[in-house]
Structure formats: C-alpha cells, structure tokens
Length: 242
Image (tube, rainbow, N blue to C red):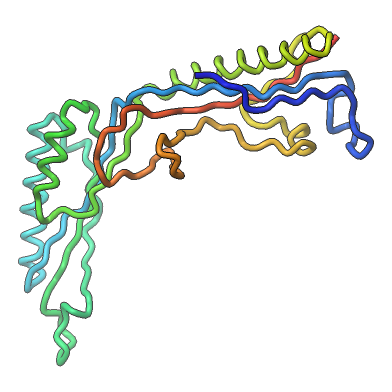
C-alpha cells in the first residue's frame, strides 16, 4: 500500500531563510512513502531457566539437567546447539531465602538465559507448547521478523521514489508548471532543507498493527504469530520545475 504523507511546493524562499540553505532554482520538494505488509517467516525466542535448591551444588545440577533437556528437545526439532545462545549463569539470593539469624544463604537460586532463532515457523506451536509446559522456564518472549529484509528495503525504496514522483507531478500539473529532473534524493531528510522545514527521520521502520509503540525487536509475551508485519519507508526528493 502506498500513500501520500507530505508534499511541499516551494517557488520562493521566505525572507527569513538563508538562501544558501535551499536550491537557488525553483523546485518542488516531495516526500514519498511506501508501506508493505507481509507475514513473518522467522522468529526469535528468549527465556530463562531457573533452579532453586538448598545448596549451590544441587541448584547447579538442576540447572544443568534442565538445560540438557531443552537443548535435546531443540535438537530434535532441527535447531542445532551451535545456533543457541546460552548466557552465563547468574546466582540470585533474596531476603526470604536467607535465615534471619545467620548470614549464610539457605536457598540458592540460579538463572541461565537462552536465545535462539526459529527459522521454520511450522515448528512454532510444537516448540512454544513444550516451553510453556516447563515450570522451570520464565520470562518467555518472542520477536517476529523477515529473513529477506534487504529485498523488502529495495521494494520500499522504489515504491517511495515512485510515490514522491507522482506527488510532485500532481503539484506541478495543478500549478501549470512542468516537472524537471530530480536534483536530490535521500532516504534520510535532506540536511539543509530539513533544517529549514523540520523534516522528521525517515529510516525504514516496523509499524505495529496494534497502534502500540514498537521497536524493530518488539517483544510479544502472548507468543501468537502475527498475521502480517508492516514495514514503512519514506524518501525526500527535490525536482526542478520549468
């Protein structure tokens, strides 16, 4: 889906703008945008394995046994050990795990964090069901994405450029002037022009379908595969007018 976000038609430079900040010839500045909605084809999973025992040795043994069970299960689902990141073990001792009359902790809690990619989402339900049924697993979260972001980026850039050109033609036709060649184009706001008219950043972004703020690696604790990911790209183009 392609839509217009912003168009400026500039024929004269206001008296309060430094002339060196803008082109010296009549021009149209067009801001084009392109949006692509596409289903995810990869996912990342993050979770912690936790153990709790009366001695450090028992807690460490519980942690190792749970880790071996997880690694073996993932291997049976074609996720190799080399593709799994397991971070250093952490020891956590809270006040309610320490005797009030002695300084020595009587209970030891260990935590190990795991991270890996699921490259075949047909395995998703099997993997997540297994993890959700393990009492020693916590902080389970998922991030979905695409394995072909370079291709998506190219499609968005071309779509945004065509959108900017169409927008510029519409403005030129409406004002009975002819659109000339493009003299500047940028995926980021044009520096000098942006300093004058206040353009916002235009990097490729992931747009949430739920209207909630998301980063490119937004967490989802419900583990449901989204129907589509929506990516957006804007470009800035300057055209001469005749």
